Length: 478
Image 1 (tube, helix red, strand yellow):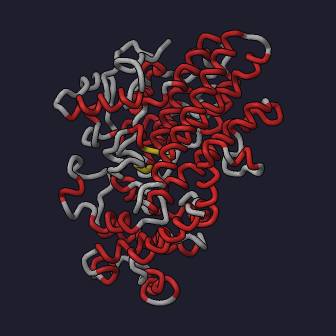
Image 2: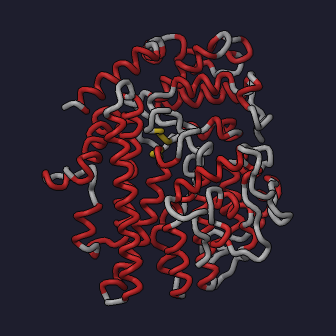
Image 3: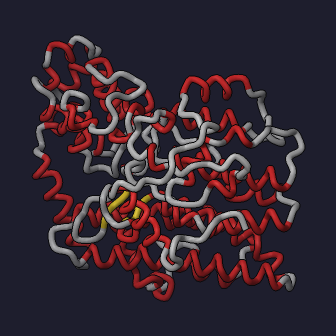
């Protein structure tokens, strides 16, 4: 089918690692061909011209890519980190073919104009649109403005696919999503190995929110094929086994890494972040399987559903009890942090560089400090001189105001307070710096100076995280 095998065969995580090693050793993949454009203005303009429902009633390809560009404009700038590592794009290749490899998601986005919108798309069109929706989802899911394609990639496009060869191509693509590498483009990840830095860790040792997206897609593909498998199709039965094996392998990998992380002394804060990841990822599995409704086979339900909501002892023991423990940590310590961060959409400057993506809360002191100093220190933007949105006092003031508004709108969470505390400590002159203070609304200045928020900001990071670590140890050891 369309996607090529991982170099050398074997573990696709290892293939990703080799690709990165070759790139950093001065042997990057070929530059993009002339048909691929890093041009934000052109991307937005094409999206603005495309009519509604241009692809069989769905949002058209150009519109979809322009939506990604709104949330992640840096992906359309050649100065962006890793842009030179996007593989070349053969002129006659389909999007499903271009999806291969660690940065296949990026290559698909940049070549989206190869998919011509149609009122009545063919089976090949549907398969390529599926690849584009997956790429858009991966590129934007960790941004402040994610695209809304969940229903399409979990169910709707499977329903629209009438060509069995193209359906097989879609299944093949789903199984190869493990190759896609978002290091540097998602902060919602945890390195479970000794290093502890997800930006440089070996991919096989990272758990992240995008693993959950892949689990959800695997589950949706499985729902698509189980009916045909039950009807006696040998090909469908084989695909169903492959999808179940992939689901199980990823769930088992995350469970093993989580258990190992729990045993590492001093990593309680990482344990807590990983618990958030596993809890959300288990929920993504539920979402993918939900497309089957009451028709989900009992064996699949008992094997994969409700990993963090299990009631019986046998269900709670699945995957060594890792998801049960992660769910307990999440419920007791993180439930209030699991919102969609709509308040931060007002701070559009955060979209100017992938270094400003939001990490897993509530441990956001370092994030706040990064925003406070971003652009002031040239080393902070080492390979990307500036974003599309200039980042200075105006953008910092918008960030502070958005956080204060978020504290008001999302009661019970602590992440925004910690981001503000980190910002204040790192910003020269704190919130009272004349250039910053002049841009803050009076109500925001007042909230920062006195009252309940001021008391929360005065709690040192060390005290806040020590308390979280202590409570984490108590639950993990229970």
